Amino acid sequence: MFLKYFNLILCLFFITDIYSKNVETIEEKVATCLACHGKGFQGNQILNAPSLADLSELYLERQLENFKSGIRGSHPNDVFGKQMIMSTISLSNEDIKKVAKYIVKNSNSNLKKTVTGNTERGEFVYQHCISCHGEFAEGDMDIGAPKLSGLNDWYLLNQLLNFKNEIRGGHTEDLFGRQMMETAKMFNEEILKDVVAYISEEEFSSQNHNADENN
Image 1: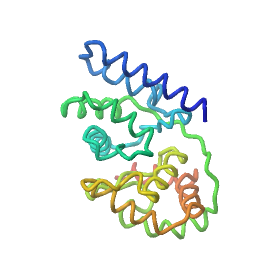
Image 2: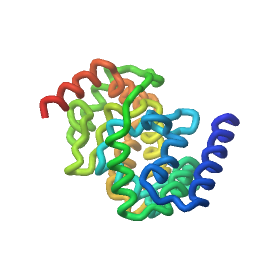
Image 3: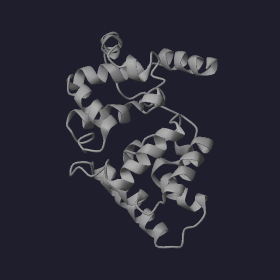
Image 4: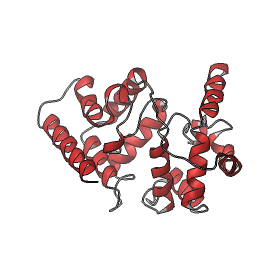
């Protein structure tokens, strides 16, 4: 725990140092993202910074806008969300579009499985999620549902627990988050682990990849 917060403080110092200078280019602005999310935006679990690879440009824009406006990250218990608010507060709407586009173009995925659970039960419970997130967790941004396959399993579990505990999704303007909050409340932590374990299965991710290629 100490190491996590020590690294978080170092990351915040880096962000503050960057914004104390005249940051103009998109590469300079994205440097704040790389400081925590790492090379290729592969994520850093110690900093609770997830992989950004495989996220759509539209979803990235929405989350950056939510952090900037305080729709996400303003809950007192969302320590890492507050870090994202600091990171986005100086970005203009045009900057957000450019940053999202840059991340999609320059990210690469290298995920490790860390969450274990009963995947058979996870598959059964995931049937509740298919109508929005798709059979292979490929997402449907037409209805605001992001792709889940390709996310760090630890991050996915943390966010489901945040929704369940009203740390995320409680803001009156977070319409999609509120829907997820009500859904996550239906299940206990063990069942949420089962769902995450199912989504992160190698075979499941392979099916999702094949589905992407056929679209």
